[in-house]
Length: 105
Image (cartoon, rainbow, N blue to C red; front, top):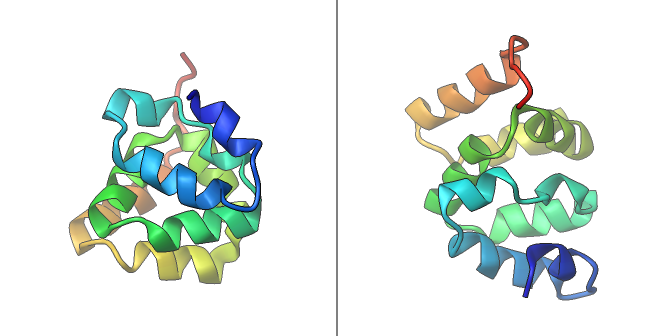
């Protein structure tokens, strides 16, 4: 089942997305439309992902999607989310957010 099909389902979409993300390669994560989920679904997915998979997701998605997710979740919830990461990975996510010199492919 294509990941975009999962995003159109409710109310278990977040559970299905969580399972799917944990099986994706980094290349697949880079094209995964996580930012098209609702704020509530993003919170549920992030809360359900292991720290390992959350790290892979946040470091693997495009800069623009990371910004969109931060905007949807708000600073407080987003910061609580990245606080689950190791300090090194949290720094990488923060650096990725502040990188405005991203070239589009």
